[in-house]
Length: 304
Figure 1 (tube, rainbow, N blue to C red):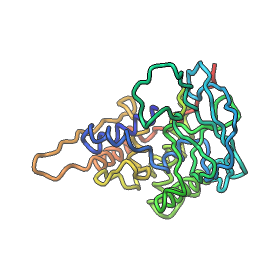
Figure 2: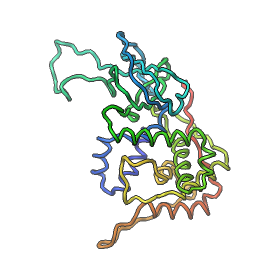
Figure 3: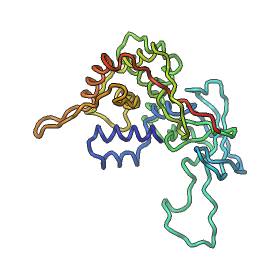
Figure 4: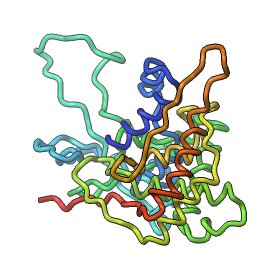
């Protein structure tokens, strides 16, 4: 949730109109490449079966106390992209809607009646899936922030989504190689992915510890961000992860020596590119107060 709010804040800052940003957030999930960074495992698979009997378990979110019914689907793994390279099939649980008392008064319903919470998996579907392990059960879940992409109905866009996830997968598989690329944009992309991965709050919530990564790796990642495209002029919510987003996720404050630049749009003049102003300020910070700064990664705390 905190990750989602940080991205929301970035959209508001870039677009400049809170109402427009809020509308986009309501109808659009994170881009597939971002979902892949947020998830435990990512794969392309086909739903091959749905178990008849539901499984009672706690909702996967932190603080849940009452068990709910999960529908369990079996998915054949066709392509393991991130963390699923050795899997042949996987179990996925989706929360069923509560039973409706036929004698209870009928109130207003959205979409014609009660529905499953989140995703309704059906046999035969071919999906690009972004999954998170249930904290206590032997199946995976699909949080609202990591909704799947339907391969069959997605057309050319679904193919592009798979390719964008493959790029993230290649970076996560060998970040050192990507960070040593002779192409600045490739180094920037690798740095962006790794910073977002390290600074990602657990999708299912819960408390975290912030643990410093190695100083040399941190220095490489921070420098790598400077080599990418920070421009906010063509920003779209469905854009691939950008260095600007990764920078926002660092959460720099005055305790880190960071001073937020003041951005003023002059009436009649072209709008100021928020992203480029942030990049210039970031580069100055990196050469001065931030030269010894070390990135801290989010590590979930063990349940008490």
